Length: 322
Ligand SMILES: NC(=O)c1ccc[n+]([C@@H]2O[C@H](COP(=O)([O-])OP(=O)(O)OC[C@H]3O[C@@H](n4cnc5c(N)ncnc54)[C@H](O)[C@@H]3O)[C@@H](O)[C@H]2O)c1
Image (cartoon, rainbow, N blue to C red; front, side, top):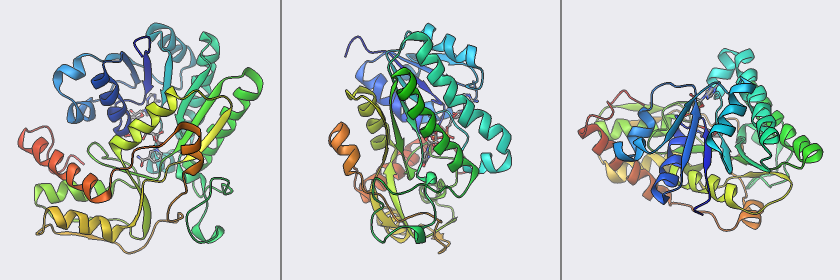
């Protein structure tokens, strides 16, 4: 363990902040690579002393030379690649979305090749799948056929193809992980961020309406971060992609979990479900990297609201931050 040095891209984002928090709390050296914007998500989930331990590298993942330099400067032994533009940003600017999400991921593999790193762990997404009607009822199986419905999903599917070719041609192994709905402190942007925004609204005692209903796989930020780290440490050869399961539940159950903590919360949801299957089977992931953490929904929601309440009291966020 003591020889480990992690490089985490997109670490000013929600998931990255939680990955870094876990590694810093283990005492592992961490470098982060991001555009150099606000570090408010890191400060939301870590103490100032912990944030100060991070080696910060500002750079754009679309710039191949800068990415390779970051790999060299950090002397990374483990790569977790999270930098990406989410669904609404890819929809608003597909060309930029392709540069960041597709070219950016190619640049990560090119840098790994240049410095001789033999493994990359990266974020794909549930968005590689098609409409629920395309699949049999029940949990989506590991080998279900992708058929993305938006640019973002197409770009993530391209990442999976890129990873496969780097294994085929260069023997760089990879694990791609497909989260569904990540929720928890710092989840403040993206298509499925409104349930977390509802938790902040409940903590701040203001009304909020979540933008969708139906069933989702609910994945607590800290669990997902731990799974990415676990995947990075797993001894694994090949290029595989795995779905994350989390807790499969209806948005109504998220609302109930909020009301269990804040009975007077004025939170509601649009009943229309997302155009995605209800949830995923993750047995292939568990077979590859071992058992994965799964915080019960009520516990994750309660922890999130408690975290927000404290952050509001400390002035780290405002009711509108999310
Ligand atoms: N949040 C979810 O529910 C979810 C679901 C499925 C997949 N994912 C994937 O997981 C990863 C992390 O998600 P998140 O919720 O933390 O996203 P986020 O939007 O909070 O963070 C993404 C980070 O990438 C950085 N970034 C964007 N463009 C960049 C560039 N050109 N160069 C360097 N950095 C750049 C941003 O500054 C940001 O800090 C992403 O790849 C995302 O697509 C997330």
